[in-house]
Image (cartoon, rainbow, N blue to C red; front, side, top):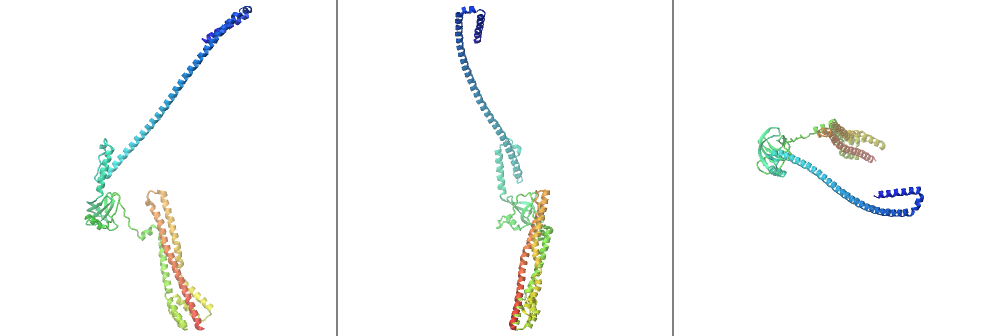
Length: 453
């Protein structure tokens, strides 16, 4: 409506302007009437303008109110959407938890089923058996567990007693006999028969045999008779289905053989060093056997001036000291410096016998640990070769190289330590004999000088 009125006004103005251009004279005549008409129309338009402003203000207020209402509704919808999204997340979490719980329940069910099967298989060997699996379809796990624990307690009470029963077992030589088997729970057993008695060990596949080790026949017979022995010699085993291997005791030859060629070399060096030590002990003992007698007898004769008789005595007597003193008496008339040189030469001559084998003994004492170290390195190389080829799954494959590594070291130390110790002691003994020879010769020289003065 506003546009219509404005258009009319604009059209009137055009007519007015056109009319003014065409008839200026008429316009002048009608100035008063047109001005009044224009003022009237202007007043009307002003009124319309005010009306339009009011309507525009109302329209704006209505629009703002509707916009606020829509904004509030959108905000409410957004809040509701957030709430629904949170609920959806919670539902998803609940679904995931439920799935996990279902999986856990399934795993627990499988675990329980496996446990029941294993328990049934273990207890059936002793005459205890659970209800068949097909009967558990409508039975709760609590009832199944109650039955399992009940029968397990009965089995424990049964196996915790000492039981006597007739049965078959093997003797130490492999002969199977029938007799009384005394079972101590399920961890030990004794066999009593007319052919032999003793503690029993698993022989495989549920069979038993008498232990080859310490004598336990008296204990077995006492338990079979219902008595309580003062000392219970018992062999405990984990399961009767797995055989227990009784390894024979290793002898010295077995130990040396486990060390390989190097072990035998060390043993041969040990035997050689023992022979040389014994030979050297024999030489030193012979050299020092008559020291005290020679010194005492010769000093008495020289003090009395009987040099010839003292010389004959020394020539008849065996021993290094007697030979050195005899050499001194033969040259007693020479000057003292020359005589001392002769004594030193005689002692050096006797040192060859006194020091016999000493160098070889010390050398063997030094070489033996090195040979043991060589065996250790050789054994470890063999062990690593086995590991490279077969891995570490079977310890028996590694035992050969480890045995060589350890045994050779042990043998080397066994040879070296006594050889080094005894060799040094024999060297000290030899040096003491040399000192005694030198003291005896100097005493004879001093006594002869006194007698001549």
